[in-house]
Structures are given as C-alpha cells and as structure tokens.
Length: 313
Image 1: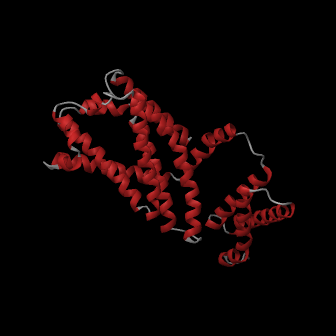
Image 2: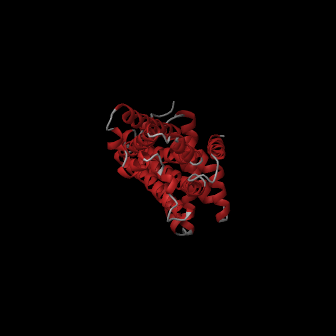
Image 3: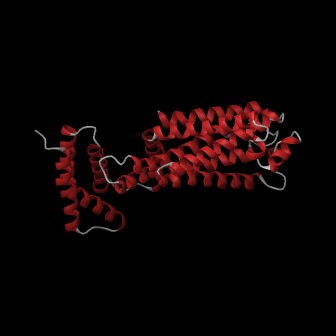
C-alpha cells in the first residue's frame, strides 16, 4: 500500500527543491562536473517519484508538479539548445497555444467580465439620461453630438504609423495592468477588464443614440475581434496569477504564485506581438473610408476565426 501523500511529499520534497535550485542555477552559469553528476542523480530520483505519483497519486498537484519538474530537467540535461528562430517558432506553434488552452477557464472568465461590463455600459447610456456624461468623455461626446466619429479625423495631423504606435502603447498598457494586478488575488484584474468593458459599451451605446452606430461598428470591425481576444488573454493571465493566492493547492502560496507567474508571463509575452499587428490594422485599415466596411468585416471575422482555430486546435 502506498504511503500517505503528505508523508511522501515530506520525505521527497528536499530533493525536489534541490533539483529546482540546480536547474535555475544551470540557466545562469555552467555547472561543474560533480554538480552535473548530482543534477543527473536528482533528475533520476524525481523520475522515479513521478512514476510512483502516476501510480498512487494520479490527478494530484504533486503528480502534475513532478511531471513539469521532470520535463524541465530533461530539457535542461539532454536537449541541445536550438537556434533562436527555431525556439521562437516552437513557442508560437506549440507552447503558446498549449498555455492558452491550459488557462482557458480564466480567459473565458475574463471574456465574461468584459462582456458584462460592455452590457452594463450600454444599458447605463440607454436607460439613464446622464449615463453618457458619466462614462464617455466630453471630447468624444462633442464628435458624436455633431454626427461624426473622432475616428474620422483621427489621422489629421498624424501619420498612420504614428497612430498605430499610439494605439499599441495604449493597448499594451491595458494588457500589462490586467496581468500585473493579478497579484491582488485577481480583484484588480477583474476591475481593469470590467472598466474597459464598461467604457466600450458606453461608447457604442452613445454612438448608436447619436446616429453614428454604423460608423463605429465599421471602425471596430477589422481589429475588434483580435484586440478584444488579446485583452481577454491578458486578463486570463492576471486571473491565473491571482488564482495561486486563492487556491494554492498542495503547495505554499509562494510556490504556487511562482509557478502560475511563469505561465502568465509567457501568455503576456506571446500576446504582445499580436497587439502590435492589430495596432497596425487599427491605424491603417480601420479609420476613414479608404476600405469599405464589408472588407473590414471580412478582415475581422477571418482573422478572429483563424486566431482561435490556431490556439484551440
């Protein structure tokens, strides 16, 4: 009969901790021959522990932890370092989609919060006479009151590349805030996502009330699906970070937070280049009448479908 799980963890944890420390040290400097010998012994011991965990403690956090620890050790000891471009290719073809699937629950929750905020913002504008005044800035309202969109004159005095850079930096700020505030047990992340949804819904509602609804939907058609998806992924990364503080599982909160932080950081870094690309679309394609709205809609729908098909395949 297998020993109780707490006793197994207490007996073997010191070697796991030592293996983690040596793997971390291996990243910054080369180990000596005795250290490499010790690293190999620790890895073989952890592999044996993983076999025990798979047989006796399947489905527990311990089994998942050992699986990740052994995979990391194997890659460190035996796998040769690939070229940078090959590593980048592997990250986007395999690692990033896998991480999105692993954190799909928090990403869906982030999307639900964003959608609820948008619905609440739109309803506030429609049902409360002063809703737009509280939720939409005076500059935007002045355009809408004239039957115009601020996006129609967005390029006045600015080049498309300058506008794309400004949009990217603003969106990146939202993504970083949503991720970083995960350390508040996810509360700050939820508030950032809710606030963005509230503003989005209020702006859409105000535009519809002001008779420029088709204009605003034409503007967001090309970039909206990907942009909102990336914000939800960043929000999911923040919620995943906060989950470690609420449900650390069988580890201490510090250990759980460190593990979840590694996943969340990779999600944020993986999403960032797509925000650059969609900023270009928002700066060059979305504003003005240069591209007809059916083409903008086709770009948005096809890019959004392809993005999620790639991530969830």
